[in-house]
Length: 173
Image (tube, rainbow, N blue to C red; front, side, top):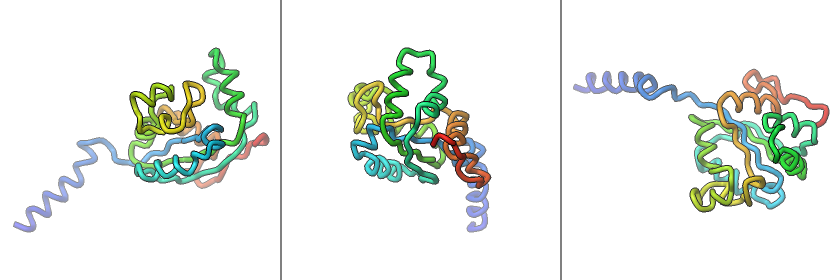
């Protein structure tokens, strides 16, 4: 009897990833924006990240200049809020982190809550944006919206971390 249960346990262990999708860990980019850094939320946000099962695999604090902020947020360049976004993102240092866990992109997006911090305070009161965001534009944190965006954003700030080639160097950073 013991051999049979061990055998079925092994079969279930091997089949679970096939039945429930891959359980492979993924990476996402997290940014604590200038208001989060200047308001001393960085350690509290990191604690929430770690308590939520993420690993912080890379981290650095830097001051974005206008060129890098413009390039990073170029997908929003035609929108009316773009100039304010660039001013905001260059107003002080940011804390950049590469987070890793199974379903990192979607779990981080859930943890940070809705983009508009005012709405987050009502609909997701335990989210990071409810904790430290102010409004739609000053919402304290950034999260990649897809695996593809995460890979592109991580490479922008950290280079190809999967090959161990180190940080990507920006003349402006």
